[in-house]
Image 1 (tube, rainbow, N blue to C red):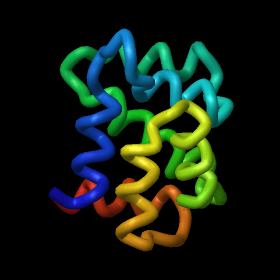
Image 2: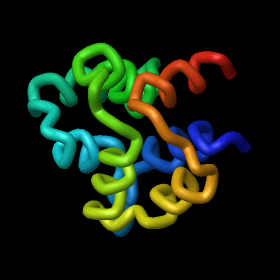
Image 3: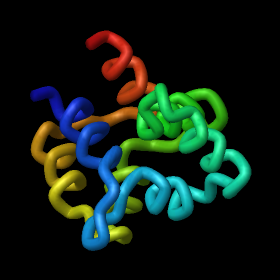
Image 4: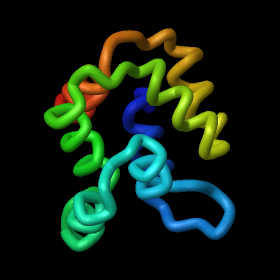
Length: 101
């Protein structure tokens, strides 16, 4: 799988142990009212909605910042995927890549 596919699928789940998309949203400073709307749309992928929001509202957010946020919410598994693929650029790069699949 491409790294963004793994990233999106891994963050979608609900786990009592692993942080997911809304933990990441909080860490990246997304307001609760905003991320709550991602969850309410049950037919849509909440992680995809989060990254779509970040790509349009925070286009300056770098993938390095994303890696740091993943590390801080103890999702080193996902941080390492991005690190090993040596992806660079900003968050919109990841969103564009996800839409291509």
